[in-house]
Amino acid sequence: MYTSHEDIGYDFEDGPKDKKTLKPHPNIDGGWAWMMVLSSFFVHILIMGSQMALGVLNVEWLEEFHQSRGLTAWVSSLSMGITLIVGPFIGLFINTCGCRQTAIIGGLVNSLGWVLSAYAANVHYLFITFGVAAGLGSGMAYLPAVVMVGRYFQKRRALAQGLSTTGTGFGTFLMTVLLKYLCAEYGWRNAMLIQGAVSLNLCVCGALMRPLSPGKNPNDPGEKDLRVLPAHSTESVKSTGQQGRTEEKDGGLGNEETLCDLQAQECPDQAGHRKNMCALRILKTVSWLTMRVRKGFEDWYSGYFGTASLFTNRMFVAFIFWALFAYSSFVIPFIHLPEIVNLYNLSEQNDVFPLTSIIAIVHIFGKVILGVIADLPCISVWNVFLLANFTLVLSIFILPLMHTYAGLAVICALIGFSSGYFSLMPVVTEDLVGIEHLANAYGIIICANGISALLGPPFAGWIYDITQKYDFSFYICGLLYMIGILFLLIQPCIRIIEQSRRKYMDGAHV
Image (cartoon, rainbow, N blue to C red; front, side):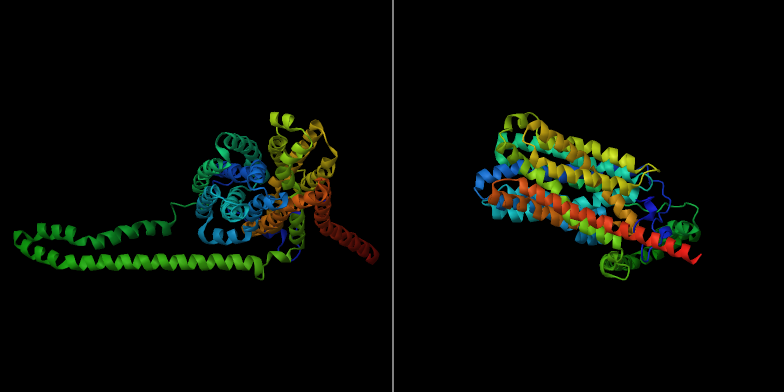
């Protein structure tokens, strides 16, 4: 269906030669780039892993507040949804402040949201503290982690993104065990306090996100001039001392009184000069910040609404519609599987090895394996992406038919492996729009995923409240997922029809 990475999505203004124009840099595909993978890995553990383990807290909230399943599920879905929905606006922060500062601020806000949620008196309080505050902080730390890996890798992007996003699987497994232990030993409120302290490690991950600056050439005469200029300026400020000593040697002892009088007169001048320099530096800093904010806003605005808008790319628009329907089918099992296990009387077997842990562990291998396969020169990343999507849809349809632990374990393994295609999403997005638009474009994609995650779990809980079954929830979400995949297939089908029509017209003309 697709022949290569270069054949995708440049229908209007962008040509195939214009989309990947990375300048050579020693850290591309090596060096500090692997620290970006490590940082992104821990960000996925702390953010996505903890969110996928919220089913443990969802059970505690149901017992504590005695609200309906649909209303209680809004807490988890708000946190997941806002994490992704704020993506386009986080792109503005990245363009203005950079990935490092954005991630550090996000870690602080996320930790504050966890801590405030420990004092919740009702579910509606959790909507604000956990859903909005913790979700906003998660979004501010998550998007920079994805963007920085894309900036530091060119040849092995799929593998790098796959390795970094395996943190979701590790995090789901670790956070599920951790939250279960903390809730059993200390209660869910103290568990959220401890988790808030753990979330401060996001600031450390953000500090590792060093900007990718162009390499410096020591032979560049311009840089030599820049090195010499500060020395001259320093000498001009401190000229009185050294020049005075020279004149003292030349002129003898008779000039000492004259030099002392000159120094006494120049001290007030030096103080005034220093004040002027401080004021000048403050003005320069304010001017630089103003220009930076203005340029960041212009880049962000032109990316979304300008003449070079991302929405002129039809394949990218189809990708957005896919994202609107896809993510809920992956999120719903994590939120509602713990309660499904209780309904099927499989709690004892599930306590030995939870089904969500099966999804998390196989999810790790799925991301790495799919990333390695997608990087092969003879394999199209789009074909791997679509095949994994079809497998996940099939698993969603089959899951309600399984009522034994073994059957559910097999389906959960399929869900975990096929959902490894999430590691390919940044790669596919970059193929569609280019590296220069990756932050804005991926922000739109995860925003669409966030809308899907926001509405999916409450919808499943609402269907259960009406039918007393989760079966219809999975069936409906599977159908919506199929609609999303059809959007991905429309544009390639149109392209194939146009190519065949052109060949036919050329043959008829000949």
